[in-house]
View (cartoon, rainbow, N blue to C red):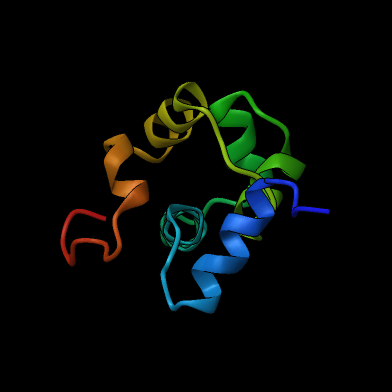
Amino acid sequence: MADEYTPWIVTRLCRLFGLVASREHLARNLKHLRTARGLSQEALADAAGIDRTYVSALERQKYSLSIDRLDQIALSLGVEPHVLLMPNLPTTGN
């Protein structure tokens, strides 16, 4: 029986071959920017109009997100959406 395609297979393959997925960039940058601004997961979730457990799951790389959610979170953090997906955050303007 052939392996069924799932997003988890892609994530495992990326890790196996040393590739860093956008989900990992998002998780790292989201947590960094949130904590740098002194926001709890709950405060960010309230500002973005999402559930706190969703923020937690994003930071733990359990979920991916839609473009609309990316925009909501970025707006709440005061950054452009692409910043959340960058491999390395800029050293100024975080």
